[in-house]
Length: 300
Image 1 (cartoon, one colour):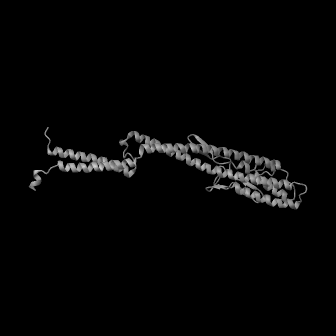
Image 2: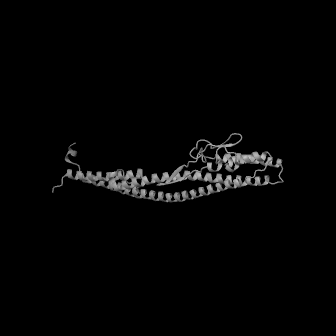
Image 3: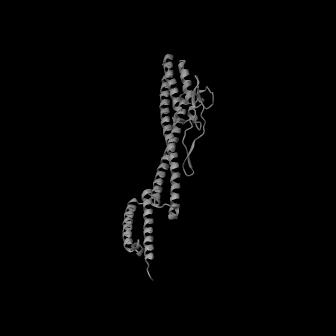
């Protein structure tokens, strides 16, 4: 077969064009950090990339939910620890006030401290996280505990705020403060049916009149409710922690898999680009020798 000058020229140009395409692909990998520019460059890898990214988005959503729930539960646990301290202090004061040797004046002095503890308890009941009241049920926009001058009222409900921490797995991130702070019967004056807030207010009123307040049994029951709810909070915190650790491990695995499929090996890309540059220069040099001047060049 006869080899013409035009055939040699065409071969050189095709080879140069192929090298330039390889250099363009390598330059894209260098600048973007991605292995492939278009889905058709690697259909299987594209499907895997979409799968891994979808899994990461979902996992990050669960991690965010678990993180928020953890913050709520941590603050709730701290609040109940403080409530327990208040209850213990009130019990000590009531035991002291109920002795036969205590004078009416002494009970009045104790009454003032109990009233202050009741007000402090109201502040605990109105604890907020990110501007949301954590003990009001789903009514998180308004303070659940308010004082009218003679008694406390409760505007929170008994609904749980469920948060999804894993696929088809939800956990309540709030505690129902109504069970502890609010009365069993709205508007009751019977200490045996009052929640912590009005129980302390009744104690302060009775002691302020110089009388004994013999309802330690009710106070113990309320204290047991606090401890029971705190144990429930701890169980939920443990579950969230275990789930969070597993999700973080899964997130790391998905991130590694995504990097293997979609991310370019920059060190290898640099080597490839340098090699392609040398090949391109060599091809240009060889082409300059192959494509000899024609007769037309001498007639110019």
